[in-house]
Length: 51
Image (cartoon, rainbow, N blue to C red; front, side, top):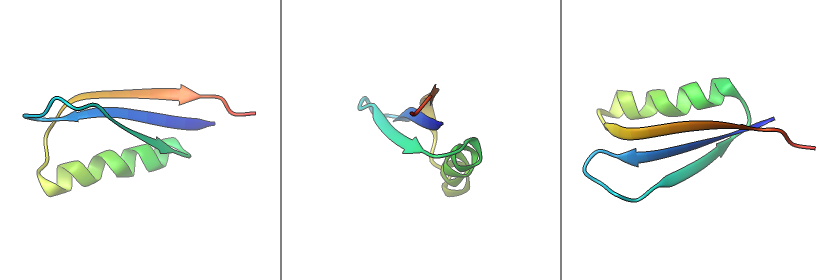
């Protein structure tokens, strides 16, 4: 299973996507923004099944 995180930075308009292998990696990825003081205005987490 893969997770795709879609996000937009505060003050921006570009949608970014990051693919991650586990929900723990998603949590760590999002925590990095918090630790850096970077604000996100949009976050969408998509769970994708891989064959």
